[in-house]
Amino acid sequence: MEPVSVLMVCMGNICRSPMAEAVFRDLVQADGLVEHVRIDSAGTHSYHLGNEPHPETQAELARRGVAVGDQRSRLVTPADLEAFDFVVAMDHANLAELRTIAHQLGGEDAIDAELSLLLEHAQELPGERVDEVPDPYYVGGYDRVYDLVHAGCEGLLDRVRRRLGAPDPG
Image 1: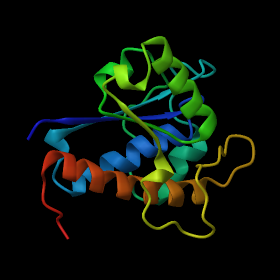
Image 2: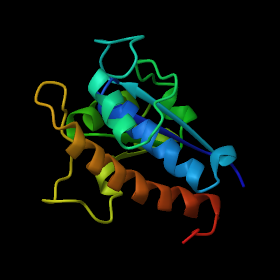
Image 3: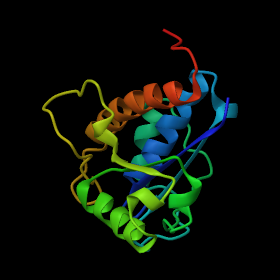
Image 4: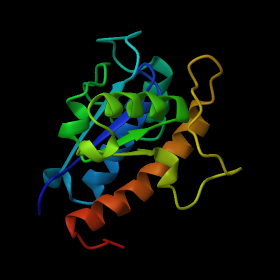
């Protein structure tokens, strides 16, 4: 199997994208695909460079039994759009930032990454249908964010499985 790489992206890379990175890593590990999938996260703004995930992100992951790992906030780079197969944004504003970077590189057809919103991959969402993972930094709701992230990551894992040619374990 040719390895697949996934980059999760939000604004500051301390709430949503590190949560998505940790959840996706947990799902990939449970699926036995760790050796075939590279996972990272980054932010579109440099507000929190070098910081670990937000304490509430860490607390919600701990409540759900998901390891945070040694994540540190970093900025998404143009090289990321060449190095990753899937670059997955948490909301429209961050997807627009990614498209701006792609435009500087010659457009989405000129990059290796497929750009998308995380919730585009969700097959079922808990509660009301939304297309963005809300930013809990100021308003909270880390439990709801976790549920949305998990749903999106499950759908994304199906997509990665197909790309790898791996069987569905279920």
